[in-house]
Length: 186
Image 1 (cartoon, helix red, strand yellow):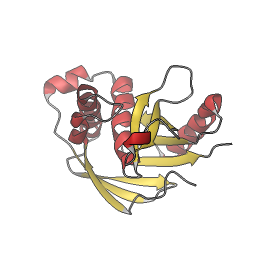
Image 2 (cartoon, rainbow, N blue to C red):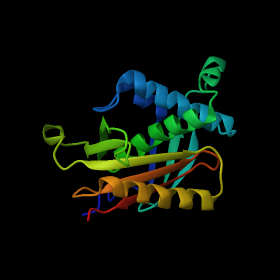
Image 3 (cartoon, rainbow, N blue to C red):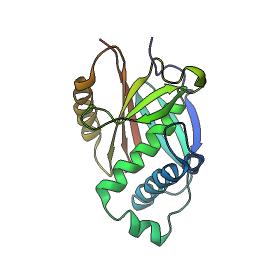
Image 4 (tube, helix red, strand yellow):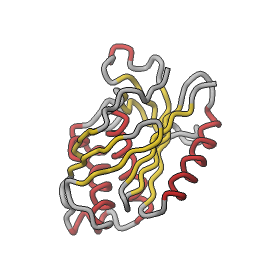
């Protein structure tokens, strides 16, 4: 059964909601992820709210709102690579929530993925049947760069293949677009 089955064609979320935390994201880290994403979107000339086009196993439009970053936030997230990576983590965690999943734990290095996912609505069995989430961010690039990154990340998750599926989310902040695909368990 596919993990990415329940997103409606039009969704909306606020990056600021990450500041309330999640099972596997503290409020402080959630706020930082939201801030990084807002810096990326702002730097690419987007205004809140904006639409992110989602493709892959899901085709949808997400209306995203965020706080305009302060000059201090822009200085803090001045490293484009770090801001893009963390901003993509924030957007991806909110996108998977639209499919009933939630980030429940950060994975260890060298596992081939970034986060463990659990069923958002079944917290009693949060650590049973977890799936993997691998995220990548692109500050600005063509569709071909997104497609290439998805293929790269799908291959990367092979390191931890087993009985669990992997969800790959690549966020490109220029358009902005996100591609979500599931790599099914073997």
